[in-house]
Amino acid sequence: MSEVYSHYYKVRRVLWITLGWNLLVAVAKITYGYMTSSLSMAADGFHSLFDGTSNLVALIGIWAASHPPDDTHHYGHRKFETFAAVGIAILLFVTCYNILRSSFTRLSDPTPPEVTPISFIIMGLTLAVNYFVMRYEQRKGREYENNLLLADSEHTRSDILASCSVLISLIAVKLNYPVLDPIAALFIAVLIGRVGIQILLESSKVLSDYSVLEPKILRELAMKVDGVEECHQIRTRGSSNHIYIDLHIHVPPEMTTLKAHEVAHRVEATIKDQFPEVVDIVVHVEPHIPNLEND
Image 1: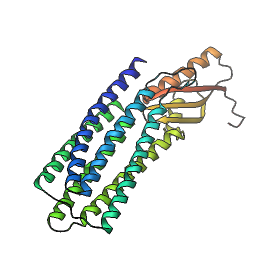
Image 2 (image 1 turned 180 degrees about the vertical axis):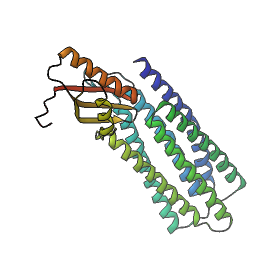
Image 3 (image 1 turned 135 degrees about the horizontal axis):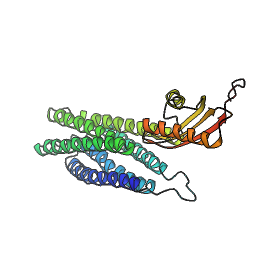
Image 4 (image 1 turned 45 degrees about the vertical axis):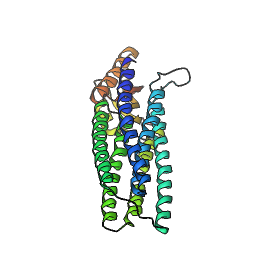
């Protein structure tokens, strides 16, 4: 279990670091966005704020997921990590709705925002911070094979695109095209909604026990083990870095129980060598009777 705790400790450290940067960026954008009546900058600030909120939700999910199996959760608590991702998606949808409502209000009653050199400085600096956070989370997500960090890095990527649209809208306002400010906010809302949908789709795969590995590949690995005559009824579930497998193997009917047990262990070891992300394999052993059709 120490490896599991070590993994979650590293993930939590990454989330705390990104939380601090996201809150700093959000405060800068929201404060100056309201001071200058820039709807797109304020919307982008709320986008960054929910980046920070999603970090908090992720931290809670990681804390819950790190608990070992117990009497009521025999398979552990890993799905709490997925529930946290769903929570992030819901927060994104709420943000999307609020920005859309504000954008349509501004389009019906235009109020030109004030654009100053400080506006460009704030957006430029926050854009640089967002890029750093995205690359950092992306790198650590791949290093730790953690879907939550990768999902959060995609959220930050959308923040970068949103910031670019804000910069464009600020330039447009400076050129006397203030209508592009709420239009840029609409674009940001679409980006936020899109990220929320992507996270929800990925989370639903884990919660619905979507197949993770190709059964054909697993069958080929099992059939390479001496003593395995047939392999079928292969099922997989879990997340990309935490996979559970059930499969049936056929062994010669004259094989002893001890020998069949050893074969099952070799099948398990062979698959885990090829796929280290597999944490548990249940191998059902059956006598091989060629004349009978497999179930």
